[in-house]
Image: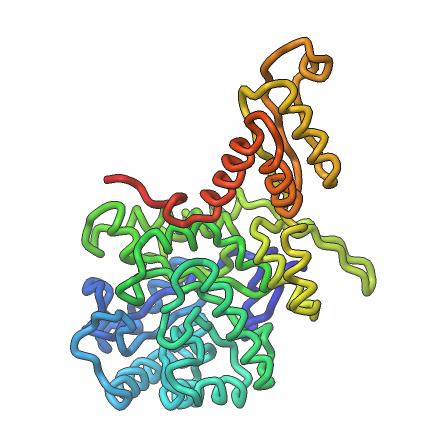
Length: 411
């Protein structure tokens, strides 16, 4: 299924341009001091962003940075927000998003002409926020959160959190096609190491199984600092590199402080992103699904109302892997081929090995994750070096699923 939604008149989705959301930061407490905008200059900054390609403006009146000091109250946040909205209303050709976790601020902003609510707590900070979104039938950006903003650590937790938020919104009667998903890139909680953001950026395409617009907020965040060791004012190029990756992997909206520079990067990255394979005729639709992680398949099946048990049983059948084993005996290779064939997979080895004209060979094993699990179990009880080979195959799979193995580098 191709993502194709109408957000207050703005087309967002796979077949549309990647939209730019310009950050208008009214909070002096922000981690990026150069981004702070005074009320006197808010219209000038907003118009410049729109002229440079922004189609959404995200107004933040209170810093969501976990280390922000001082932390202002709802009243001060509302005063700042209203002052900006009074100036921007009907004066810029862009959708207005309000970055707030408080229902009272969101509701007054919607009354004042705002179009979108951007809740970085994913409806967790203020229990009435979900009611405001439902009552006003407005689009909402929801960030992966469990108890506090951005607390899920690792892609598995992010996916689970977003699935819960979608289910919660659906139960409240919200049109979930109006939800925009944000996977919470950034150091939202102290225990979140940069490698978890690297994982999120690298596996951004996993979010596509939710079939919702995807927003990436990477601009000048701490994971860029972890690589470059530079202050926020010097993280532009690092931000652009990460932006190119998430756009290529499926992001529909990029939230950024730097519209002109980001626009060029986004256009190039989008041009190199393959189109979704999707065919429609009348009421029939056929989509080619790129499932890279079995848990993604489980979320997809659950969204289709497949039973929880059925989804768990089938998920390891949805992802195929190819494993190369080098320099084993011809006998071991032929046993591996026989065992994987018995489980519905296959194996390729050199021609001379089939006729036993060579003592050593490489073998390419092809199968689903479930087939490999069964193969490893079977080989563990075989003779020769097959138990060791089984152990090595299992370790290769474990490494592929281990976030520290994938992204942690020695410095």
